[in-house]
Length: 75
Image 1 (cartoon, rainbow, N blue to C red):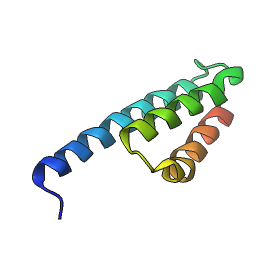
Image 2 (image 1 turned 90 degrees about the vertical axis):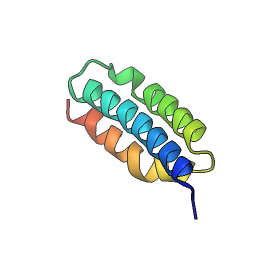
Image 3 (image 1 turned 135 degrees about the vertical axis):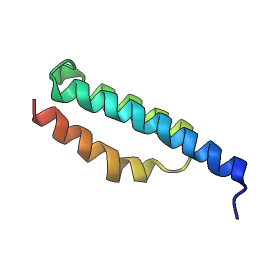
């Protein structure tokens, strides 16, 4: 069972990742990120997610990547 400190650390890392994804999604929806850079933005977020949650690359691909691609097409 995780300790309270471990839970707090995971909550902090999740909030950090969610904040990054939310800002990128807003930039994509509002057209502030050019279409030519969409894949680069997603790749950078994938790397950050892997840093924050090692071994969870598949989770990023299933949860965040589709969300970001949808945002990019909804400009």
